[in-house]
Image (cartoon, rainbow, N blue to C red; front, side, top):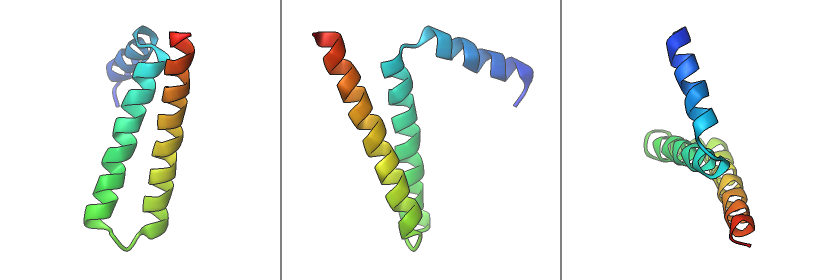
Length: 70
């Protein structure tokens, strides 16, 4: 990754709120989970960890959303 790409990502992170960042993280986690399920179905532990990580990110984003609505 070049220095320009790193700076661009840092700027994106500063401009996005926590919910947007969690949404991006969840999308990436689910992409990896789907890749594992399709190409490496025998990697049950890795798939399970991806699923659990995605669930944690989802739950945290839901909690933040509820806090913002109150």
